[in-house]
Length: 236
Image (cartoon, rainbow, N blue to C red; front, side, top):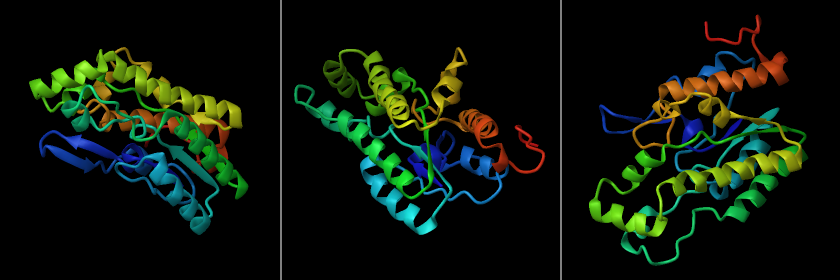
């Protein structure tokens, strides 16, 4: 079972249609072709861990999967940028508080384990701070100015997301839970930003291929018995 947000849902920004669509060859559907058994993808667009944890518990009790891939953080660390643009001098909180994110991620793992099911974590793909800043300010000069006043620096967007990613790794270590280093796979490429959509945060089709390759490599190393006959670690 996959529990997560729009990344696992397979959402990309379609440049020609100027809207978000679900990529048919997203990493989960590519993975389904390589693994024995069925993958139930319960990921939802806009999911935070606060929203997702309740559904994760219900889905786990209903489906009784053998493994649960937990992929959260991208929405949790995000802010209401419209509010920031309107009130740059006010205090603003992320969608999921930093300490709450750690607490709930730990709770998700403990719950999955309590059902004799194996949890697996996934690190966050890196974002393109410049493109994301342009995206959330909608290329509006006044919004850009106000958001920058609150932020101080565009690089702070990358740093903030990195903090949440570090929490995923910390929880992985503290709970002895394996994690798939998707972030590392992206950062192996000097220009990792070419694997992201124009919003600067969603992996594009090539980005999904990177995630797929990394997940498949992880499964081949840790759970090779789940791979279809031949154990081929590449798409046919």
